[in-house]
Length: 119
Image (cartoon, rainbow, N blue to C red; front, side, top):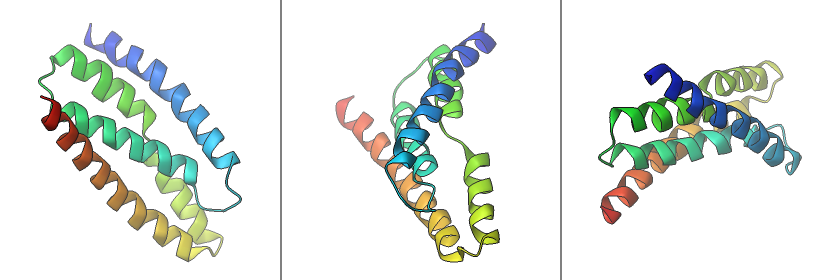
């Protein structure tokens, strides 16, 4: 049952990641990977929020592992950072690493605080 919940969450998270990435990136004329940055920060916010809630293992599998796991993408973040560095855009590569870490951790903390505030 848990595997099905993870798959169901991923079935929503993965297309949402793709569509969000394309929509955000299409609005920016920059080599910076704004689409990936956006989905990773949003996913961190949601996961931080879920972490502070009393959730069942089923909800954690569906929303945390499935949805957030498919929405966020560390592999694409890594690839895009490496690609920027290889293309000589080292400033953007470094900015991507720093901004992604700071914004992701900050979003997770905000999500946690929001959930605690409404509990």
